[in-house]
Image (cartoon, rainbow, N blue to C red; front, side, top):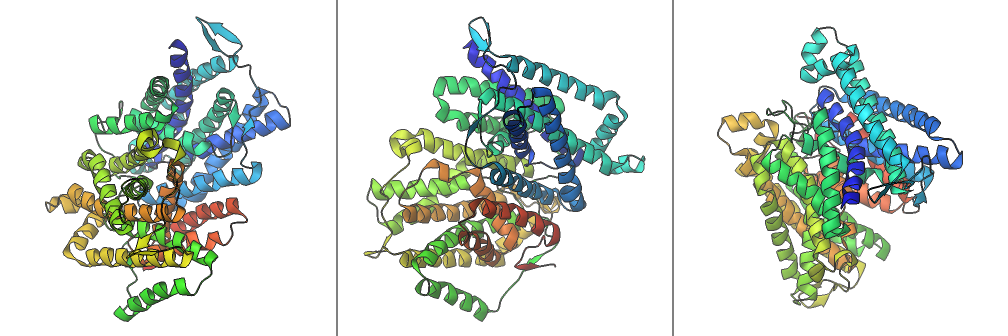
Length: 604
């Protein structure tokens, strides 16, 4: 048990380094930087190259990592975040997601996707105390973490730039009036956060021994959880949150096995959000401008078509399965499935203004519900399709019920955890779901006795479900209920002043979105005929969110066009899959910066 606690402290120290960067940037800019984990991967891979390929020792390697990550931190703020000044913080948050995709897949293009041993820059497992084996690398890691935190505290307390950072965090406008160069201070915050992440990557590489260019996203998400547990914006909270999370993870995995890792990590996040949403050491007051709620559309309105325009669009969609090859029909099914999920998301994230970052969990519930009903209980497909949506909505709403009492950005944080918890529950429910092995032999869809045994037939089914989803969401948008959603998304405080129960309405919009996500998951399961938990990862949630940003966050028809661009077009370029994913990030950043209303919307 002692070695388990020690392992938790080491991991917690690494989480703390990254979490401090997350909280520092959040405190100064009110931006949740989801590219922070990608900078961890940059640190790991740069250290691998200079330490393994060139054979450099630890100190020169650390200096190179510091310089490279510092430059990247400055570029992220100066080139992407600063130009978004004046827009709602949700724009910057989504931009950092795009930057993270660019960094992750850029690393994969440069270094490849294979796992490789990390160089022995410091001895590991060369020391022993009280029966616990550890290495010089662990001691250096602990010492460095303590020194780094102490130095950062002294810098923020006594340094002129540090005091300027604190002043900017408290009130940017007042700081600007006092002559503080706010833009430069924000650059410094991003540079410090990036360097801490890069150096944490070195120690994580030493501890794990084997690394992969795509490891950073998972580490960054866990560090974000640590920052949220400690209290976003609180430097001491980030340290405490990192240590607590590392120890809780280590003990939980020791007791329940590695399969429960995500359940423990994100379950702890949800518990903290319900009990103390501001975090263990966070302030009692809510942030003034919530970074994960509202809309950055600036009064944008979806482009509307005349009735015959919608009829023509429906006719084209229905006719398309009869005009394409098997290969193109297979691509069309992917486009339609993602579009169905994205259409629902326009209602909650676009109209009601509540960012949802864990929709993949609802797709997972829908997929497994439909697969189990058809394989074990031999239900007809159409009935299983309907129940997949219902179960996904009920399950998602039941888990998120306590979160709707919180303010908007806490709900968004909760959806990250809930999406991961749903998939983790599927993974550990082995008697029912076969755990990580997944479910095989899922039957092809059967409609009114006809087996849909060709790609074109399955594509036609998906198109029909997509049209039904479009009709449902567009009718809701045009109703009184839709106008209430729009009012909440435009100005939540004003809506609450009019006695509108914003949390209840957002929960209703979320229920519709998760119902459609569950049906999309059912269609996916019966197209693949095999599913496992790895399909429903955070990248799926981010991709669906990117689709509605591209098409227009409050435009259902735009979601279809967004899916065609992001799912359909790249599928034609499968020969370069890494470049395809890289393009997602570039496109997301470009759209947010230059056409925030999306492709199928216009400014109001």
